[in-house]
Image 1 (cartoon, rainbow, N blue to C red):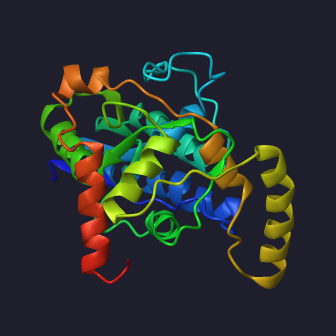
Image 2 (spheres, rainbow, N blue to C red):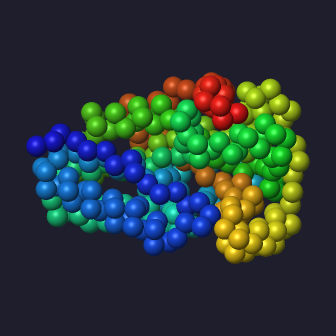
Length: 272
């Protein structure tokens, strides 16, 4: 008999990743792991999902920059990509399976996770270092980063403190930041000039269509995609109050410290 199991496996929605591959890992894979955990009489199953299952926030840019609206776990889910849909379907499958067994289920919806060891975010740091980064649109869309060690702390707290039954928690940093602030913090840690170039979304969309078509035909990853445009022009902002009250979750690593530690790790491993 096992006390707990953690499912941190997942397939990211990179360019060229097939929809059925996303479902095989993020939906059916999660369901099979949970069924296995139930057969082994696991008491608590912690599943890492994404805050993206709720889709982008409906933000028109009219609110003060310092106080964007924060969405809780009860926000209706409106996934906007195949990746987000596959993660939501994974959550749904686990919720249905949990109703048929006795294993407790905790779903942690992780925010924009970064930190040492994360090679998925490396190209962003490289383009800023090389001076090739540009904003799409105003650069004032919001994201809510979480340092990888803070997310790991949240997982540990969920294992120790989550009640029985079903629990869902957002796991993000305390405060949303704009893409301008996020990129500026990276540039500062790299000793580079803060990026300022902005390209209108209306110009980026047709360019992304052409590049994606060429990428699919010639088997290369295009430098500009519709998913990147979506990421940089749509806001993702969340409340972590439920996790604070129920788990004692409090992110400890601020953005500047987290970015600096990430840059140091990339440099120590020859990536920058």
